[in-house]
Amino acid sequence: MDLAGFRATTGDAEPPAELSLALQTLWWDAKGDWERAHKCAMADDSTDGSAVHAYLHRKEGDLRNAGYWYTRAGKTPAEGSLDAEWESLARALL
Image (tube, rainbow, N blue to C red; front, side, top):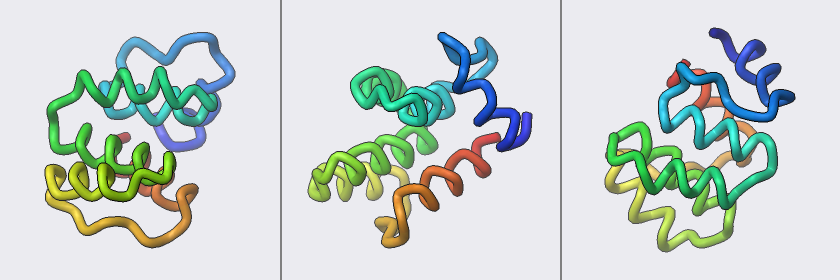
C-alpha cells in the first residue's frame, strides 16, 4: 500500500486488518479520533510505535510526554508541522 492508498482507507469505518499497530495509530489519528489512536499507541511497544506515540503527544501539546516517547524511539523531537511529521511517519511505515 502506498500513502495515497493508505489515506483513501480512512474513509472506511475500520482500518485495514493488515496494518501494524503504528499504522493503525496514524489511521485513527487521520480520522480525528485521538483517543482511539492513543489506545493503539499504548498497545505498541515497538520503536515505530514509540515514534508515533511521540507524534500523538506532540499533537496533543504535551511536549514533555512527547519527549519521553521520542527518546524511546531513538529520535530527535520533530520541529516541522504536524502534517509533515504524520506523512513522514506514514511513508516510513508503509
